[in-house]
Length: 328
Ligand code: SF4
Ligand code: MG
Image 1 (tube, rainbow, N blue to C red):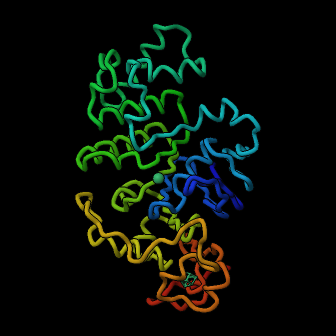
Image 2 (tube, rainbow, N blue to C red; image 1 turned 120 degrees about the vertical axis):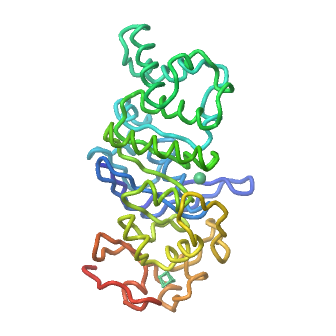
Image 3 (cartoon, rainbow, N blue to C red; image 1 turned 180 degrees about the horizontal axis):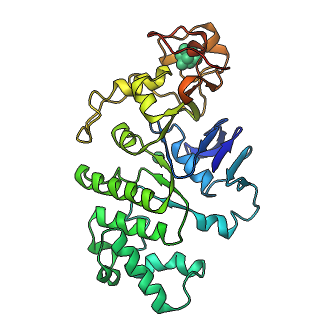
């Protein structure tokens, strides 16, 4: 349904001058229809860059992004309208993504107008009312302005706007990170209900493993622009393979939704402008050896749908016994 393949380059602004760095490098991802794949990793790992590439907000300098088999990274003037309609994005800060001078009904109706989805203003307003109720607001809320709502309600408004075009695929970049934990749970429940009812596919981006545990069918762990592990969610939590995945999981003693104050992962994240050679993770890895310092590991497939890019996993020399290698 959705796939990315081969290396991507992207520009990052650093210290006021533009330098070209590999913000995302050789990231292969596939998301089956109707499922959620979450990308996790520390800030600066490239998660948001992936979201921007997919949505056509940044241009990849190589590789491909496939949506339903069509390469959407090649269009010279941005993505074709039909593809844009079918892919929508939910952002972290619902206030920044909603025009404060517009009434909520107009905010939600704007994509409907862009894609000519309603024949009349009456039909448009009926659709807006329906969307407001679908996301747990009232039809009369359409007459209000964004500042009249709480953070959670504003995120419901952005969700109503995002699903107004009847998309199949939603990219959700930290959609609940700015919200209180009780509100966070309500929004996540809404997103899961929406997924079931509308058959949506999600790419979910989060630094919060408790949230990711609740939302995901698949989890991709990113480190300095590379995907280091992609596994079925339950498998990743029960049996993490990559040393960095283990480190991330070690920082959360309690995966309950109430756990908020987690410790940052041990060790510094190196500068992405000048990442360490070989395996980017080697300066922080207890299993690093000479091969790790010179040769970049590639993502290999193991039993149970697990993919990991690590020489130690491949060589079967983990700290704990690592599952048998099925293929290489
Ligand atoms: Fe550690 Fe080497 Fe695996 Fe990188 S490739 S995570 S340095 S063991
Ligand atoms: Mg981000």
